[in-house]
Length: 128
Image (cartoon, rainbow, N blue to C red; front, side, top):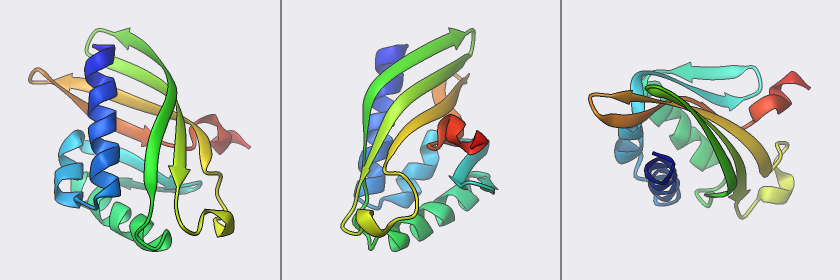
């Protein structure tokens, strides 16, 4: 399971980098939630796609996400992923948000396929 989810996250990161947003939305559940930034969440595949288009624009179409160390906790058809998420972009120094994050993702197995239900690249820093 962990290898499969690591590969899914890497493939989603590649879709973000390559700006293949129609492909990207297929990594998510129908009711998925994306934390765009603190105090801003979007829900559903289409809203997530539109948010990633805006995120790409914010980073001058140069954002490159990668994952560092990961820890996964599985309970049946649900997996909590704790991950060091690293973002690179041309204008990263001017971003008001950290580019080195401790993300939390929640995956659910639906019809035999792991899909992201909660995508929170800010992790527990939302509590700050």
